[in-house]
Image (tube, rainbow, N blue to C red; front, side, top):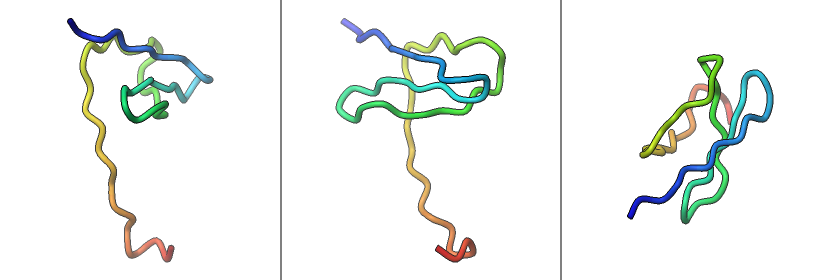
Length: 53
């Protein structure tokens, strides 16, 4: 009953994954091959007050 995870490689450093209910989310690749994930957890970091933004 699980959903299939769609992962697309964009270039050498970046890929994107299709998150149901959210859309496409980019991720940085730290290994040469694409991840074979069945589940994932997405978190949004709050902006750092020291960045000046």
